[in-house]
Image 1 (cartoon, rainbow, N blue to C red):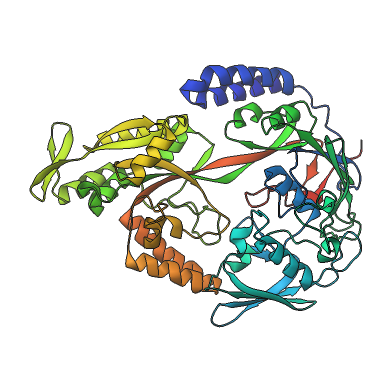
Image 2: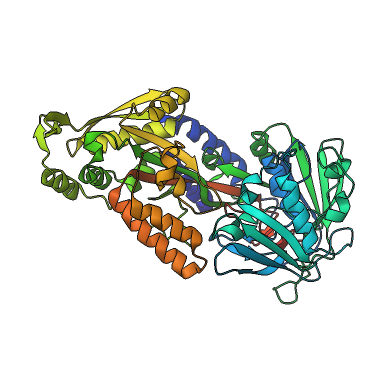
Length: 554
């Protein structure tokens, strides 16, 4: 009885912390969850440690192809990592780690990269991996007749060749110290596709890789089955006296119509693991029949200023706004537990960053002091001053797309916070196309926008002068010192020096505040309790440690 009371109390506290517009819906869901899931978990078994065997059930929508460098299906890309491997992978800190290569060398001018192929790696058909497979894969990605999602990864390569079976050499068009991070695409077996038309070959639906699992079958377009690769090069187990990796013997990938089916399938226990976003968190919080892991995703929200406006051109005004916007409170009020406050579009966990420290701590007195120092005076409830002979008020519109309720709630709370220092903000909800038109034609003051960061922690897209003309630098920010830092970072191959350059540049852009970074939204993974083992997903590979999952014997 005491246990049930504690669970009921936890559910009630969680429901009260969800934002007001969803309280009724979430309370209903949590009520159902308490009734259905706080009873004794029928999947609980005695866990005696890792064992081999069992079948793991995963989710996918219908594949367009099972060729990992041609598919545009997100789920195929995810589970293909169990069949195929890349030269390099990204770890949780966004740092490149060797996989099918064991190391690489870089020339003094940063233009020639030499990758050394790992010994004793075998394809699933027992042929040996060689540098020619890597050469073939890059050639295939570059093929103009094929639409590979990895074309951007190789667009800076001027020449490439397998020097011998153990060595691949790349020559770049211009230095890019993030080249290793770009080499994360899956490698294909050259011998398997000789004489085949890559766009049409049936071999695309019968993949052969080097990873921990082999393709077995694709049945009636309803299930893909994978089996253990007994000759996996990375099967040695770091756990003493435990079986060789991977533990789970088979993987059954169930095929559904849409992404939204994944949550229902997980609820029905038709699949054992599922990716979720912040809209799904409330359905799974507090449940005893599952394991949930949250982590920062790629989606970053920020406020852009139009720096051509006289008032917003002043750094002191932008700094005052930054001090007055309490982004930690914003996140806690609007999406409690579902986002991480951040200054720049680089994940706080990235090795290049310095953690989750916020540059502008909330300080209304500092904000008011900055405005007064810059000559702004109060008239009624808004500040003003004369600029170039014209009276200018701190009175701004903030654009937000009308179909994004979270951004709208962020915007209204920012307006409330800025009102406290004499800045008036009107939030304008627009259709997305119209918002983009107003931003591109500079018919805006402030806009609450978002972006999805790439696997490369390069912020040139928002802060480089050259990106003003592409439209991605929406603020129109330009600083020669920042441009120089961005170029130096791309040219610097020493990681400690590169991080120092980044942090110096970060101080400049934070000080000048052409944007206000708000947050990264969390995403997550949920797992049925019958699945045990190491579960440490991150945004660069949600199932990176799947070979160490296991299913206890009943």
